[in-house]
Length: 423
Image (cartoon, rainbow, N blue to C red; front, side, top):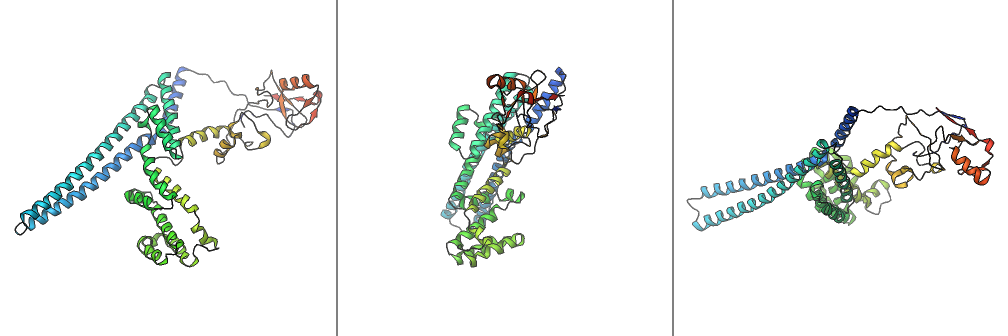
């Protein structure tokens, strides 16, 4: 626990604290340390470069498929005209060619839009590379380093806003700070429609998204589409449309029987148990919480497809710091300390899954004064084992001619206290 007074229940008068060794700093060691720090920070920025790259890759795949589809259609139509060249009328031939030209023009406009999107992503990629270049090449220049750190903090905050659904705030914040090239607002805005649809108990947008990303979802072994189909089946059963549910299952669910037979059998049983069942096994399938689970799964799959972490960088950064501060006393109300971040309920929730940190060097901090206890302000042990600094004890005694433990309320005489030695 940060800034926590010692509470030795064994009432030993000697407190052995390993004093930290004095480090000899040199210019070389500082430079090496800075290099390691920068390398570590850059490694955390993988998604910063990966996201625009994935967007460019996706645009390329979409344009490639569109070109192949349209050109195959054009070639087929031209081949058909060529076969009928002796029998087809001039007007029919002209109409067919005009239609083909219109389709090619539409394809051209679509490719221009794709090109514009790719150029925007390339611009983002260049801006982000320049941003990281500041960190690596200008790490010893304080002004440049501050710019990088401030931009990074702002990026982390905007990312958190987007993940929590504060889209307008994120957009306004990024516009004010002029860092739109450093944040992935478009990805979150495109997923907004899917989330809104699922919140309204509608799978249409989510299924369209699955269809657009079918190949990539297959690579990560996603079960999102299957779960969406299951949910649509359940909704038909909920409405009492049994025949429609059966027909829907034959088309969309039964193709997954080779890999998900047990789940399909369980879901099929809802045709008999229906929505008002009291059987927990099937009652859970009708629970509205299933929609929240689908939203969570969609977000995780979407993050994975775009090489984004499932947790926000804000959470990751906070947990990294909290993991250093966490001790076995954290969460204990009796050792609450206003100066300790982990005593705050919000931070404590973030640190729940974190391990207790290994503290090879410790400092005793007086709970009353907040001062570090040392040879000049040595710790004094009360008969109940609680420890406070000499300065705090003397000040208390001068004011009230007695010693009262602020934690337990017990009253003691000055001669009852013993000095603890730090070694």
